Image (cartoon, rainbow over the protein chains, first blue to last red):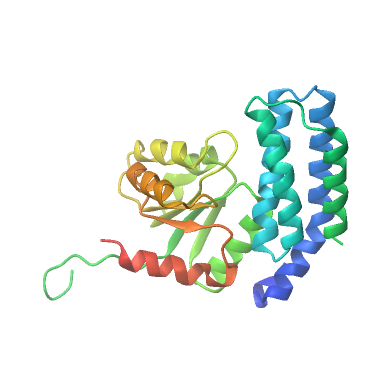
Length: 105
Length: 135
């Protein structure tokens, strides 16, 4: 982080977030597993949605538009469920999470 | 007070920054400190911000709108009930910046709204500009 303090250039920001993404995606994936195993109950689903939402904003802030795009798709799917819709399609969620992994590399 | 007898706003020095995303918190804090020269206290939640508000005594609060638990508007409402929290300007930071939402945030008491995503390298200048435009 000391390097970042010296040089807040866009590429430094990208590098910083690229280093953080694996951990953040694991967090999202774990939240997704917990939500699915809880039958898409409200509380774990809210956490899953919040983490997806955070990733939308962080991806945009740090210059990862693909991460933002896929996280936004995930966020919308989860929001639909939070708003009373049917459980989100598991296969679609898995596919989005896979895309997020790819976009983070 | 200046020569015309008008109260001048003090120099912006201390910013309380409330943001639940750990990476945005790190980068924005660093930008505000290293590029803006501000002293920043970063908090991860509205509750933490309220608990540390009086000891830090900020000139300005930067407040994320969407946070788990106590969100930005709820934090602002609670802040206004603190003995020293009534007059401190609060800037909301949010991805929801449609015109009607900005009007709503101002009605809640926000001095200004900064759109997300923001450019970390421009954040300090944006905050300083808002500060200088406050009445």
